[in-house]
Figure 1 (spheres, rainbow, N blue to C red):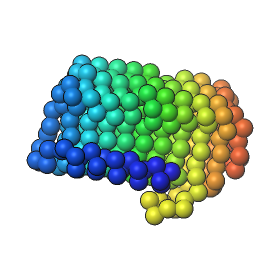
Figure 2 (cartoon, rainbow, N blue to C red):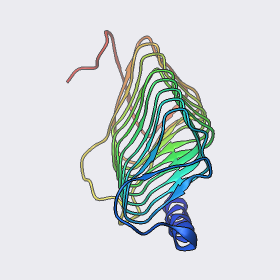
Figure 3 (cartoon, helix red, strand yellow):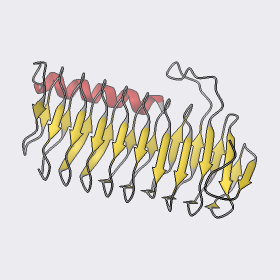
Figure 4 (cartoon, rainbow, N blue to C red):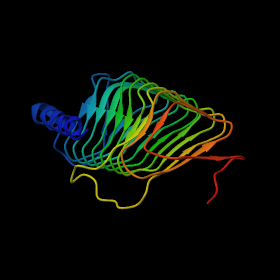
Length: 227
């Protein structure tokens, strides 16, 4: 996982070295995309844009917009309702996908929470190292991956390729807390749920999951697990 993130960082820096606007401030993307170093990027609602990248700044992709890859190092990324992207990558920042958003490949962060709202779809993995992952009636084809984050799969969310919480072998990870994993009523997780470190695993009696390795399932009834 660390190698993947390092490659993403280097790719973003290379793109910016090749042609970024270094001015501080907000950049508005055009049909060809947008690249900057010190500034946020706005993709207007409904725009069909190329790739967007920055180093120090957030990226906001408006409702119904379409972009190629969206990459930042220090900043959050938000994908508006019914917007679409090829992939989303950040190092230090959160991810938010609003209702009906679609990502063809993966959604990745190192240090940042990840929230997928109703009707969002991700064709690859949703992965981070530090930060909570929360799905509400979302679909993820490539599985969920984290090291130190809590995981909540809620509503009628559907996850293929399982859930993996890896043991930390990296300076990216520093938390000593025990991750909490909740699979809520109506949710489906297909594939292995593999835990390489201690976790609290709560699974609704109305949820469907695959085989579990490395944790004991604690079943619960009702909408929420015991506190």
